[in-house]
Image: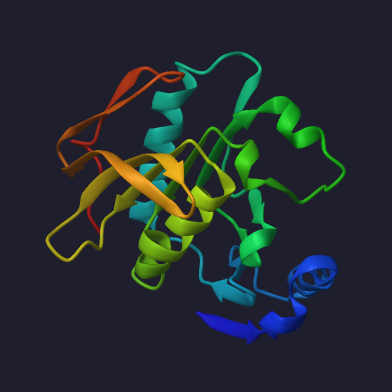
Length: 197
């Protein structure tokens, strides 16, 4: 992962637009993920095949339970300006009208009902700590972290009830367990066929 550092003192308030412009103009190879993580523009390589298989499985399972006016958006920009961050989650679940805003490349993170992140070896701590705090701060109701790189073995954790920049753990298990997602989803995610890295 490479990074372009932006001075935090100038990256808040009206400087958000300048930070987003740097993000937009970052020249990265096709398939790479460009994000702003706490005022730092980062470039990560494309995800692995196992990573993509998990995203596909989650999309298929969620598509059966979503209201007609909601969408599943892989790699949709989700902005948390209060943390000088613009994340590109593996999957954002949001009402379709959340994409009707004036910004073409991202939505406010708080407009999402569920964010799904699948860790890669290079970004696992960012997904576990930094992004969890950012999504909580933005008020995203549910954050599903699928962590194939967890120290004790692959895990799945559903976070909810955001307060400040902290989530409560609602459900946790290892690959192979089932994770119940509450309403408005109301379904059980079977992780038994999630590939390991």
